Amino acid sequence: MRQLKDIASLIRSKNAGPFVLTFDIMFSSDEDYEIVARSGALSREMFAALYKQPVEKVRLFACPNARAFKFSIPRPLTQGDLGDGDMHGGQQSSPLMYVEIP
Amino acid sequence: MDEIRYVAASGAIGAGVHEPSLMQALELKPHFIASDAGTTDAGPFALGSGKTAFSREAVLRDTDIVLRAARKASIPVLIGSVGTAGADAHVDWMLDIVREIAADRGISLRVAVIRSEQDKGYLHELNAEGRILALDPAPPFDDATIDRSSHIVGMMGVEPLQAALEAGADLVIAGRCSDPALYAALPILRGFPPGLAWHAGKVAECGTLACETMGKGVIFATVRQDEAVIRPVGDGLRCTPQSIAAHSLYENADPYLHKECSGALDLTHSCYEQADEISVRITGSEFPAADRYTVKLEGAELAGYQSLIIGGVRDPYIIMQLDEWLSQITAYIKKGVTELLKAKPDEYTLVFHVYGRDAVMGVLEPRRSELPHEVGIVVEATAATQALATAIIQYCRQPLLHAPIPQWKGAITGFACLHNPAEIERGPVWRFNLNHVAVPHSSSEMFRMEMLTVGEALECVS
Image (cartoon, rainbow over all chains, first blue to last red; front, side, top):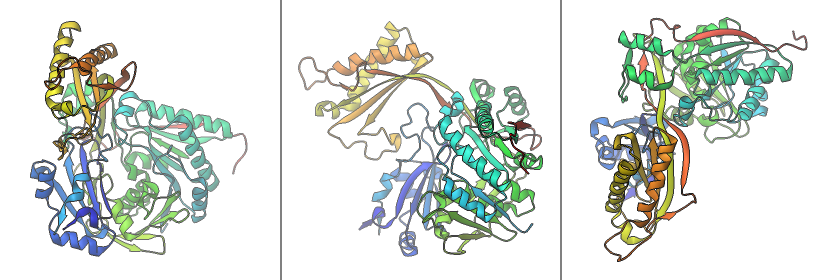
């Protein structure tokens, strides 16, 4: 079965301000976007399980004109606070690479 | 006036303005040039300390280029969030740079300085009136938060910038500022639709990041009554409907709704079309006005002084029981710090960043239980003084080196120190302590504008 990394053109994470992490999944064609959209594999429940977050904290946006999906969650630790290991929030997206797309 | 045209010189003053592209963009007859110069992206250090993320030399170079271009075209320049965090110390730093440029070039400038650092007494009054509200998620907040903060800034919208432009400024030096506001201020002042003005500004503010592929150049925008057009200027740069639509995702929690002081930019009904080979036309963007005017607050406070020790572990017996090994070491250290250094557990924080296991993702790491053959460990001690932080971290070295494990009989050295001396002093470290908005009594009371004449003209320019 194909995984998200085999279809997406970019999977990335970043701070959205010091208190929120945001994840973008982007595609280089409308067809690829539609394949993933129709699969239903990207859901708040999937993300909540993968990142061990309560599902009500997970926001999901479908952006067809950008050929993208976006997840946002509260940061487990505020950017730069004691214990935070990713100042820019840029290295939090790798687990999404292996999501299976039926 | 049937349109407003402008140039976004850079994603950040100090990161490098591409002068040939900026000069080329002048041929399109812009009405102003703008750029932001700050962000929270680098972390709380700049706001906490009053220092800057970019060097003085780099900011002077970029500012000089922008001012020369603006002078050539006889148009104003707006620079916002100066000095990275836009506190008063940063505004003074930027003003000093502008004074140097004016002196070196022999020019005179009417400079509007807009300060956005907030007086603590004023914030206490707002809080007493219930005019400081939490966003979601927000750290705990009370009057003591205000007192602990080293600097608190309010993020200005278009209104103070419009006042500066109406006062005839050649250069606006703004403290903390909404990035798109720098670009939306003049179009809205001249009666263009706020939805298109804010959206064009939102796209322009990151410079060429809105292009299909990043490259050297500037963004040129045109705002009309029924459309906004985004055009890159620079070799090989191209905007597409997809690259412009995708840009609204970047660093935003919600790709469709962007809150500002006076309302929210709503992109739900935005349309993107290729206007020519490299430009994109935006229509349909809306900016419903907010019920009340709010100003986002940013604050930073001292978290303490920090020292750290960096090393690694290669022994598979230690790695397979890393949690137990670390908790044994932690217990030993805490006991020693209490007995020898007389510091109570709540007077310091000890953090182990275990690279190879979960240092990067922390609690979000799904593969924590997979055992690597080697781990890197950064131990951080943070305390009220540098001396205590360093004493604690120096005390950590022995238990890290020699904590026993049952698999080996006899003394081991289980931690590979990277340095000698093993400890590194980091100095003061800061934390963001506000994700709140203020509800001021008026849109102007949180921002203070001053008009200055900087420099003396050595030549007559007409």
